[in-house]
Length: 469
Ligand code: GLY
Ligand code: MN
Image (cartoon, rainbow, N blue to C red; front, side, top):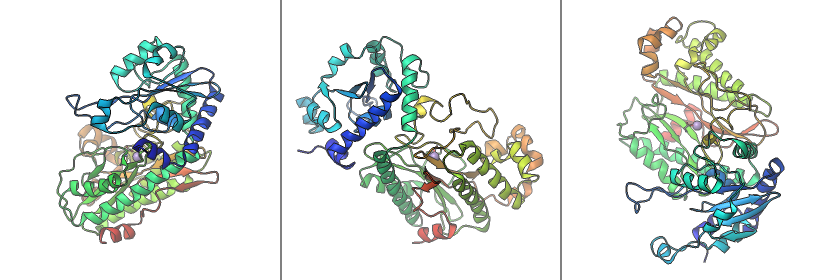
């Protein structure tokens, strides 16, 4: 009988192709390092008492090399590409409560393992291996005992663990065909979720109803959310995760919602639309400024281009637009140099996307920042999550925004920083624009880029049309 795990793998192609994909990933890994590696999938955590378990999400580094989301399993890989599986067969009690699961030997065949052992065998075979610690503290203690070193955080590694992480970064930065097939699936589902959210808005009274309409599409396709959805009329709260506000006709609704496939690959999309189905003139003005920044950034995405340059392009286009609208005063270049744009656009232009929505951020800035580079302490740059030249095969988000954040604009000492550059009376005329963001997932190709979430329109007329449908 085909269990869910096997059917998940088959959605990614044939059994042979999963094993094949994983073998190629191992071979590439062992061209960069020459020591064994152990990766754990992780364990479930629960809510308050053990029987009430939270949904399981396997460690992304494990998923990259094991392909399927198996619980409490480890793999050991050896140069030039051997794969060992460590897994206990499900107990009868497990089957009673949780249903049938694949047996160890079945999983071994599915993922192309050369040999399979019970979990307990790992204790005597894990020595001298590199690893990346999982998030679960209890499991971290086991990892530390097995490998005879203190492993507590994926973002502060040393010795062979750092070398492993660095090799994994180089592998996972650019996606292979199997990864891209999954990322496109997540993107397609996310596009449908956003269409459903727009169409549900005029029949909804609260943010929660629009969120439900969007997540309904994701769960109905047997996917999960790649992160906690943001669906809010207070888009100026950057990671707002409250859904209780009423929807009023003059509001803009900002929805940042993305699906994750059953095999763990993410997408990340934001759109902002008018609750009434029609942007007010002031909302449309600012929306168009954000859209022009979005378009200018995407026009620049290509191999070899520095991602920081794309961030600065967003800053320049937004600043130009705000000067044109009379909200900012002065020379565009000088305003950007003084980080005035960051008063309205305080985050980075985007990030890597892959098995995590901010891909490999468990490793701190090792993936996001080219070796030798560190975060700037400039207000307009310090939240930039990616600072390296783009390469074909990378998937990045492009997500410019405009926000009127009270804690940035209204506190006297902060306001003083921007005092002379902002026409505050003019800004007050845009009080119906609290937060706008437009975000797409952009694949760097050999000749430029492809917006894999581009089926979802950004043009305000097209957005209005869907909301009114
Ligand atoms: N989707 C949320 C973020 O990129 O931070
Ligand atoms: Mn994002």
